[in-house]
Length: 151
Length: 132
Image (cartoon, rainbow over all chains, first blue to last red; front, side):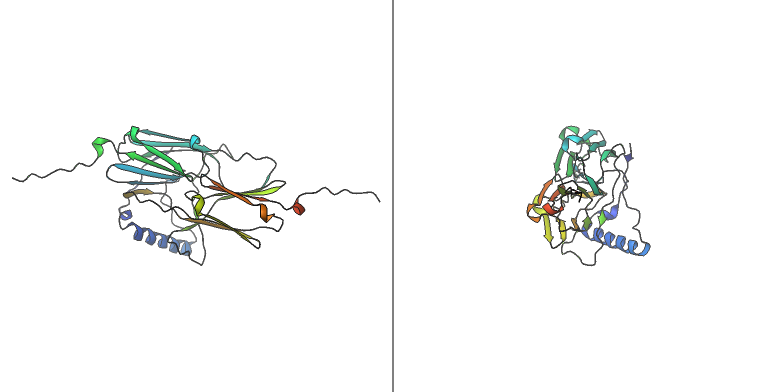
């Protein structure tokens, strides 16, 4: 089981679109020059996740095509999110494969979140093969505005 | 193969000289193609593509599958970004032995399934050898 601590990329904040396009151009430049892109900034553990946050929620998305919702197991405990699942192969008989690129099998990934979350309020949706999780931050973790009293 | 854990597959970006008009990357979907006695089945992983975003085109002998990813939602600040969201494109050459009128396509959970039935002439037929 892999525990992920992700790096903080300050350059990924706004303006997001420009930076992403610049990064993609740089990737293309690298792969042209060296024949291989620079090391991807992923943990290497399936599935690939996109995590973002706003003031009171954490949003996580994962691409899980061909998985059935009953084969995906999501559990949250304080600051750790654990995703577990399995993609079963197609049940076909007497066929010969010309191409077999889609992988099947089990996966397990644990992600350490930057905030404790309220496990009761987690919302999970699975649409078009994309799993979307919305995790509300635990009350004591939300940023609090402090008013300045003037004398 | 079922016992091994799933590994991350880097999404393959399409290397073409022509650019798409949409400002999103174009990926090559992972595909399974298998053949049974009566038909050819193609399964393509296109997560994030709704049914209305799928375009299948068959002209002459080229089968083209295109998937338009749903627009990515931007919620707050990005903390981790391990994959990019974009469109999918893949093109295959199909032999004339396919019955074009009967091709059936369906989309479920981000997986496109195209069933291409073989034309009668292409089905395996036993040929009897007679003694002369």
